[in-house]
Length: 47
Image 1 (cartoon, rainbow, N blue to C red):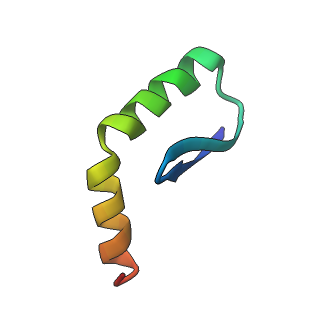
Image 2 (image 1 turned 60 degrees about the horizontal axis):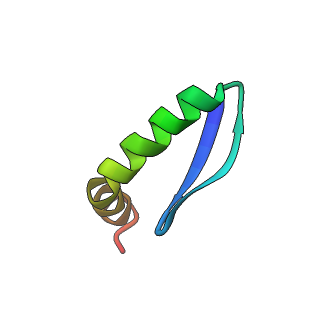
């Protein structure tokens, strides 16, 4: 199962294997943690 989300703005790019209910839950988690995820991404890639 996979799901790819853009972080700014948060948007589902593609997914496979997850139900709509699961994708909605994942999207909620990504939205709630957007700031943390962007910070971690930028630190990892030295941006």
